[in-house]
Length: 291
Image 1 (tube, rainbow, N blue to C red):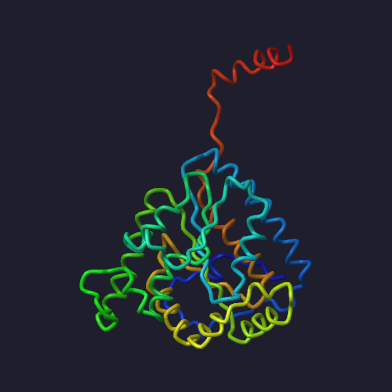
Image 2 (cartoon, rainbow, N blue to C red; image 1 turned 135 degrees about the vertical axis):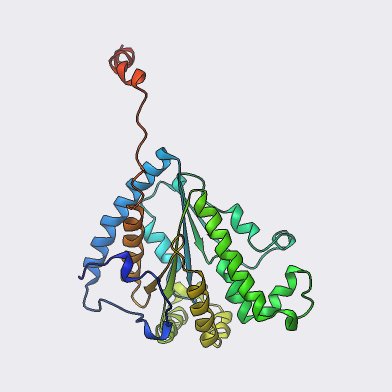
C-alpha cells in the first residue's frame, strides 16, 4: 500500500470537489488496512496519555459528510483504544429551545475539549453554513435582528457567518486547541448502495430514515456549499482534509494517520518530569511501601 501523508489530503488552495476522487488504493486488501489502523490506534492511545499528563492542549476533531459517509463507524474504530476519559464525542442535532436562546456557536464552545483531551464533533458548527444554507428557513428560528423572512438572508449573511467561524477557530487555536477538520468525500452512487443495504439488511433497518432520501435530492446543492465552505475556511490553524470515503476501511486509516502525523509537529507535548526532591526520595518511598 502506498505511503500517505497529511499533505496528500490537506486543502491548501482552492479545490473543486468534482475533480477529487472518492476512492483511492483500490488494490489494498482489507487485512492490510486493518493492520495499519491497529498500529496507529495504539500510537494515538499512547499520545493521548501523554497529552493528559502534559495538560496544555486539547484536540478538536471535526467530521463532516453526507449521510452514510461513515462518520459513526470511524469514531468507533479510530478512537476505540483511547481511555474513555480522554475523548468526548458530540453529535449536534437540530438546536433545542435553550440553544436557540444563544448565538449559533454557543453550544459548540461548551463542547470544546478540556486540556489533555480529544473532542470529536460528529457533524459540527459547519452545519450552520451547510444544512441551513440548503434549508434557510431554519435560520428564522434563531430570531436574529433584521431577519424576519428567508428573503432577508442575503449572500453577505453567509459570508459573515463563515468569517465568524474562522474567527472562532482562530480564537480557540490561539488558546491551546488543535483543530483538524475532515470532509468525507462520498460518491452519490456509493451513498445509494449504502442506503439500499440499510433497507435490505434487517440489522441496519434502524439506521434508515426517509429523510435521507429527501436530503439526497439536494446532493448538488450540498456539494456546492461544501466546496465553498471548505475553500473559505481551510486555514493554516484549522485545515480541512478531504478524505475519499467510498472505502470505509481506508478512510479510517487515513484519518487516524493524519491525526497522528499532525500531532507529531507539537514537539513540546511530553510527560512532565517529577520534582528532583521527589526523585531523590524514591528509595525511601519504596522501603516504606515494602515495609
